[in-house]
Length: 215
Image 1 (cartoon, rainbow, N blue to C red):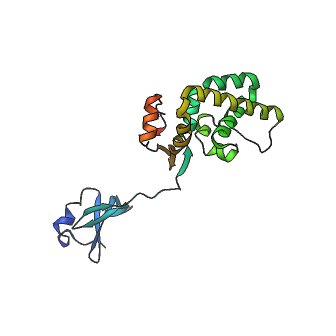
Image 2 (image 1 turned 120 degrees about the horizontal axis):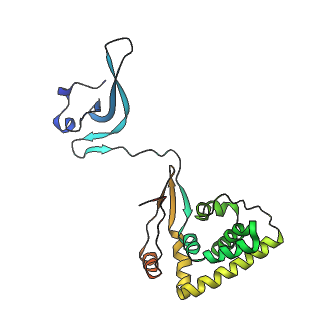
């Protein structure tokens, strides 16, 4: 049980604020959030803990606990796929006209093939593509017309990106996949850029912006 107020030194008590209580275990002090509830049918009140806040030490003060994740973070390749999507919308429109219901499938598989040399449902699900063009199903076997469309789409992507980025395309392909989205308990966070990706982003006016991402 926590001790009385007088039992705790001043360097501990300065962290005791409304809605908190201190628990002493041996010579260590712990701060918790709490609220009071009346015991039904009586005039008595009991304290209900709302969670651990952190440990208090004389040297470091309040050392807040690190929040526990509900699930493991998930990483999505974003930098290169985001860039390709940003500058090849006309290719997507053309493929959707030529291949109708398979246009988006062909477009995404062409992008994955350009990035990885192959395509699969797993690669799609771990890419920004799955957020920008959601709910695609990529079967293991695709009909010949779709395969032809993917090859065509990949050539179109290569021509467009080569014309747009020139000699910088190699560096974009190499460095931009390091820019990733992290899904941490359902919230998306964009990782930072390095000097090279920052320079290339500025040169080609690539804006890393999406309303669903945290800053």
